[in-house]
Length: 342
Image: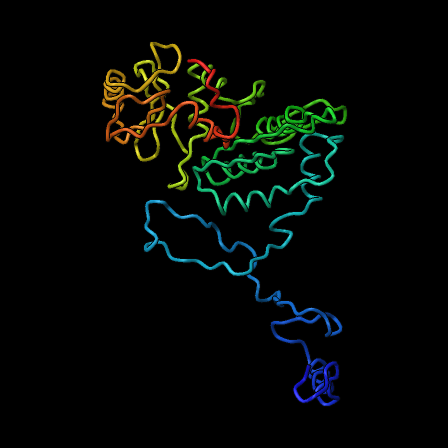
């Protein structure tokens, strides 16, 4: 409503002025649609968008304080399809590696995933893809490691579509990674032949056959539990803290790994049997292992109970902490059933 006019009426003078302004050319930062009467929207000009390889990476060392890391404002960023690929490229890439008949109509392009990983994951980082699909993420990590001499690792999780009987974790995801690493490609007859250059790397395929709950964790053998701790541990206070280095040496009783800061990780066992408790005697063994390996405190100790405390120990309760690492809620589900025994 214009001041001085009756409600619902707009003066001819203002109407003509607005029409003249509209016809004089586009508004610099606001767009009102093709006819000038639409809802106002912010307008971004293509020439103002930074393209290509900006930035090369977007991660910083956790050892630097916030004052030492310069703030970088990315602004609007676009990549040409030649930089990021297209879904059609992803389908073609998958077909060339595993052959026709994979049933995927839309596949993320390899270039896109390589750019994203390069931007957000350090050279020795860990990439987790909980919906792995055809395995593009793992493929991208393998190629980046080869091209840049990096040491990134990946964890892919895929269950397919069990409701329709489609379990393509092994038939497709596994097959793609296998063919990438070995250089094998399907021939006209469907049989694999050496049709491409192998990409250095490796992976381990595991099928989950048991429900993960407190009873399952407590019944794990030592090697199984060590694997879970090493692959699932993360610390919200540190970026890149997932990189635990496994220590597998029979001369250590409890030591199973260390982080990049040289801190030791221990799992308490009762004479090779079930998970034990942290008491004065087991703490002495922790100290002996730490001295032998040259790891420093705080000592990250996983055990069922903590009956002895030390300023040098950061205690993680089994199974609670393991379940938390895996993103499971031990309080709202049946993970802490009182009937569970040692």
